[in-house]
Structures are given as C-alpha cells and as structure tokens.
Length: 241
Image (cartoon, rainbow, N blue to C red; front, side, top):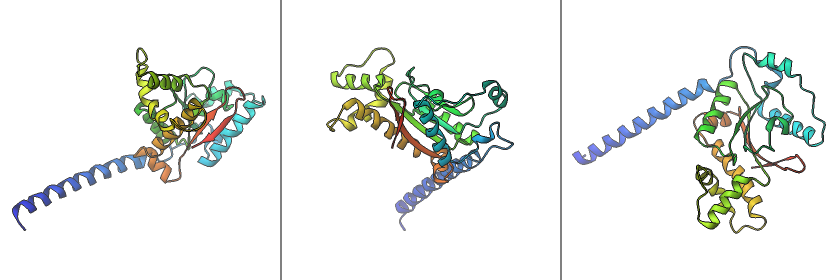
C-alpha cells in the first residue's frame, strides 16, 4: 500500500474512532438519565405509561370542554409536591393567555410539565427542558399543543407575505415558525389553519428525533410524543401528528 493511501486510511480510521467514542459517550450519558427516578413518586397516580398518560390527558380535556372539571385539592397537592414532582405529561404550549394547559386538561399541581412560548415551537431551551422532564422526572408523554387563531403564526404569515420583519425580537419567532408556513403555501383551505397544524407536526417530528435523550426514550417505549390543536370556541383538543 502506498504511503498516501496509508495516511488517508489512518486519517479515516481516526475519524471513525473519534466519532464512535463521541457516540458511545453520548449514549452512556443518556442511559442513566432515562432510568426511572429512585424513591416513591410524590404523586403515585402519575406513575403511568405513555398510552395511559395520553388517555388521561384527553379525558381531562373532555371534562374541561363539557364543564365537568374536577375539584382539585390544591392544599393536599401542595403538600405532596413540595419536595418533588413526577408529572405524567409535558406540554409544549403557546404563551397565548387563552390556552392555559392546566385548565385545558383539567390537571392539578405536579401533573403537567409545561414549556410555553409564542408559537409553541421546540428550540434548544425547550428541548433541554423536556430532556430534564424525561430523564429526571420520568415523564412518559409530550404533547406539542397549538391553537386556533395563533397570533405568532399569523405574524409569520404576514412577515413572509410582505417581506418585512416585525419589530423587536419578534423575528426570532418568525424564523422558527416560517418552515411550517412555507410548507403549506398553495395547499387548499385556510393558510393560517394549515400552518398551525403543520407547525405542530414539524415540532413533534423534531422532538421525536432529538437525540440522544428523547429519541432514545421513544425507541425504548418509555416516551410518546404527540401533537394537538386547541379550539378556542369549543375548548376541545384535536390530535394531530
């Protein structure tokens, strides 16, 4: 073998070795993180699997939408969760004042781990927060929750139509939501409604493939990631994605 080929092979081998070591280190780190926490959970009823967590979440929404909300003993729940938490679901929700997840899903203290940002997208900070919930709190379900008449999605549509960026820090929202708007341009139906749904779907896909922690938990059957869109008038959440 010539020296040039030998050097190239050595370089390739070193790269593969370094890549393998980096991947192994990431998986070694993720392994312990997705293990269930030790000790009894503060709310034993929340220690459920992904499918049961989704059923419970949607049952809570059905109660809310029909005005049959439960009376939550908040004094008792404060005592239970003062020294710990084990939420049965995490919500990536919009900052819109009309879409409070605890109300929408008729949940109590310590039931939902909530990340809210206008436009309900998963940036690095939101993803890291969800990793904490899954790795350290054993949260078995994540829902990305969009809603009708979303102002952040509407602002993104307007910005892309006019070519003008909104003032202040709002362009950061536009940048995150723009892929969803572009993906549905030209589709039949209402552009805003279509973009709201696609924004949820894209963020569900993003989180499902976010390694090493979330994707590993999904592959292991310990985590389910779904999407939903909340209707402001009826109060109902429709599953998407």
